[in-house]
Image 1 (cartoon, rainbow, N blue to C red):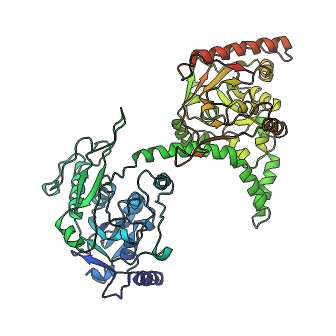
Image 2 (cartoon, rainbow, N blue to C red):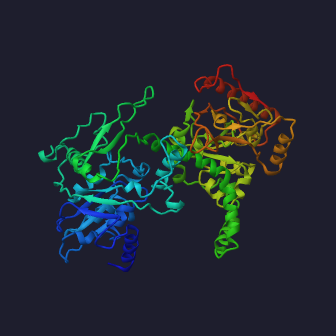
Length: 633
């Protein structure tokens, strides 16, 4: 044994109070011999809080695992805990692929979900739908060995986190992100130490037959015995392995001493089928004999987390957009400044040199990358609200376009998702059109952040930048401008539709100079994703907002959504309100290098009428009351 392993064994022997021959606190019980010519997959239960039992028994030799095996010296056992290597199918297959035999892989089948249920005096195992380890054992020709750690849940006692509590909701939400259930537990005298509770690990091997073709009948010895057959709603062919694998799994449950109990009562939402919930309890005589005097009891629970697992990518995707919008620029500005005073000062210097050399890129159409526009995170964000893109007319690629985006809202969520990403497949709905979003020039003064937003095809909203985009030889160029600008965010009141547009005519002059068609675009629901604090126009708070806007170019707003882990608390997570972006019909505009005021006013009025008609035609289908109308300021 290597020195490091011997040190670990010593530590765990001290923790287990074992002297190597007469364990007083922990033991490893062998119920059958293991053939050294075969390979084995140990499935360990329960997970507990920190997988202490699996590590001390199979990785640290604290209970003398290798001495229990009567294998010849030429074939020493090689045990590896899959928790300490990449928990992937290739890694597990590599551990079990050893022609000479003697390879043991230990897997905690319940995983972090089972850790959430680790509570003293109760035993809940996540194994009903865990089938990958059975298929893996059959593929590699390894024997399954169920291992049970009695009283393993009593080593560390978690803080109370019943289903529905805030702590439980937070752990369930973070588990898919971190791949672990954050352990929160007190120990004796408030120390992070395990309680001195006798624990005993029992295992028994079960050989598996070779893998059979899909659909082939299972041998008689693998057919389920003493276990209720799942109904059609419980086992779906599309998500279940082949029939022999299911039969092996049922047999494995029987060897482990588990029986399936279905909850008689389920909470069902109208029109939506709820998944079945199962609690696994040990009822076989061997379990009863082994638990005699240990004080282990069982309880029924509904540990399903399917809804949480489906929702967290959407919530996190929507939340990351908010955090990026608010904090990414200042964060990287401070980081570059901080690195100048560290040993990594050269990184900041090199980037600042690049920053100066690349200064004019935002004014030259930016630098888009299609792979960032196609990130899956934007599809999750689209599904969170959800966000839709409605096309009312074709945009022929034989001309250029100036799209007016309304309303600005707090963060232009609908406009960004639909035009700066491919979440709703803009390029497929409008083939041949390359759209560029225009943003405040001051945003491109933030290091790193400027490169990030330019990768989505965002350019600076100034005359030189927009002229550059619309002057390209290739037709089909389009720029979308939030005409109301940052000041319109002061009117981002849920249920209201106020647009600062009556005196905004620069986008019309831009269209006339290049002969680009004007296209009204309205995002219904943009103002509904945040609550907003409105100040009276004669108040000092409003005057501070306007003064700040004149200096910095944007308006500081007070807004809020709900919390990340609770819908009843305040936070920065947007409300899940539908956002429907409707692209109107193009308004043909002639090219005038020096347009007159009469021409500008004429096409500006045509645009106002087209935008108002677009709003009236689609407001009821987007959930806006018929009595609501646009207000131009």
